[in-house]
Image (tube, rainbow, N blue to C red; front, side, top):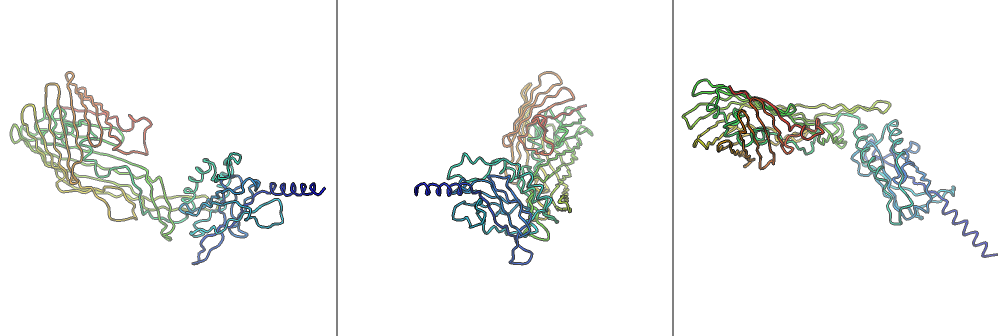
Length: 511
């Protein structure tokens, strides 16, 4: 009889232990307006990672208090670590995760024998309450999304398992918190930092001669194709096969070259041209609240734009049958679109508006080139162009309007040299550019005349690893230029690589 009573007592105790559900409770605190004081943070979402459907918001009586009844038997979670996540308006707070070890000694005595409690202690944020708390409407809206996330399977865990949540939940929280932080920090913010980017600012003149061209390898010593001679060696135009030329090369997206020349007499010619490039990309930008330097907002998709273009006017003089010289006067422009201010407003319903104020920074400089062409023999010619002798400097990168004023600059002074060797239907060419920083790039090219009024061309830039292939039939030309991602256009990026700025067309009229 006594053994039977002991058995009954054991069964009652077992049923009591296994029947208790785990309740996780605690209080979230934040910095009060007055110094060295804290209070409870209201309207903060607390998410138990293993069971997001039991997520809750912190209350106002008392302030910052939360209680999550997981509905999971205490015995299943005993001696396991669970993760709790905070969703708030602070996207930079490092205190947003708590690892809680569930153990029997933490259970406080309570009158409800069906529940077992674990208390989260000392959950305190080093952020102002006004920067941490969500508007009630937005907190409820976010909570309705979180509670629909899948639970973590408790049947597949071991005693050593840490319950951190499903990948779907973690992905949601990773993307949700920065978004909330952006839209909930009401106020005016100044751009202070701009993350690294892909655009090579201030290099469009160098790259246009070697990589962004359909005449690769022949620009500094042009022979058959004079379409870009006004840009890279205008001394050659005085020896052109025809007295007049007008040429266009464009991808109708972000790169255009238009140029031409005409002969005044047997010794003097004059040319003019225009080069235009445009690039854009999404970059990280850090904004700092003007009224509170400690409050920051990170934007990971600010659109930075740069337009770089130049106009050329170039007379050329023939010294004798072997030697000619040219002088180029050019105007160089650079326009940058950079982040300046971010104003965030929130109405009574929790709806937000983000208003960006951008700045446009423009540089315009005048500069000079001096070029020489020399005919070594009927088969070999060389050309040299000393470019931007005045030492124009362009911005080497974009920047934040309110950031460090020590801008990096790219000096445009450079030396270009080329040679062309002629052998029957073939021409072989090579170009190279040296800047003040040293070797920039070199290009080699070949062109071939398959039949009358036709020209096949191909070339390769050894440093940029770009290449071009072009075909000209009489006055019209089509080219494919693979710049190896030199030009960056993320806003209007095409689905097909060949149509993403690599397909060029144009005309060449020699008369």
